[in-house]
Length: 247
Image 1 (cartoon, helix red, strand yellow):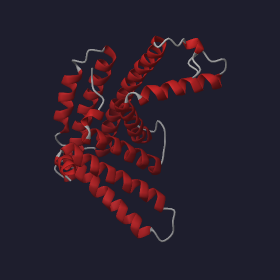
Image 2: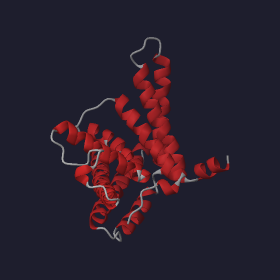
Image 3: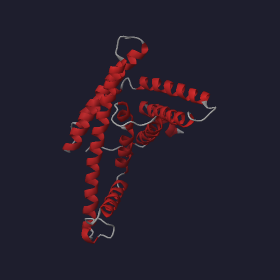
Image 4: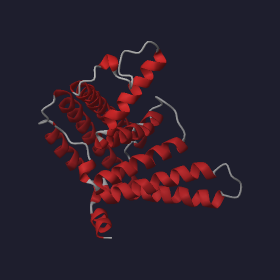
């Protein structure tokens, strides 16, 4: 109970719970819509989803400050690729939160002349850039982990060409794919924070891909992706050692 209290006392913790609720509603609504007699339930889920989405905007009002701080921290990363990817990603998050704040002002009626669709598209585009760059950083980190696994096996005196698990150059595409997937599995198993961050970013990118028309999906897929991403976010907030660190 104490751990849950500490978690909910954090702004990020409350936002992750609300986000999980929002996407759960979206997923359930998608699953129930085709079924007869579920109209009232679907309507209630839609209203709850809208209310939670509005509530989350309140929690995000100060996130532009956190994004600026994250940008300042990422500039000092020692490795060039994470430094460039995270810095530009965080700058895009700053712009995203600015756009999000403008949309919140528009929703309150304080500035009804604001072009809602234009600002929403800008917010979605910069959010997409941020997640995409974070994914590039994840792929770079995965490649480093895979290289470490290969080197570690070589140090134990097992030649790559004699490796029974298939790290040698495959003779056909099936063997090569099996070897690559096995190496990827072993690499991510040794680095759970990297696995968690990669899964989170892969799920996060589904929504902007759909909104920008790059890859059309449906509310069910987006809802499931958002729920998985929210659970990953809850884990990183509740267990800070599971958050991928910047080196």
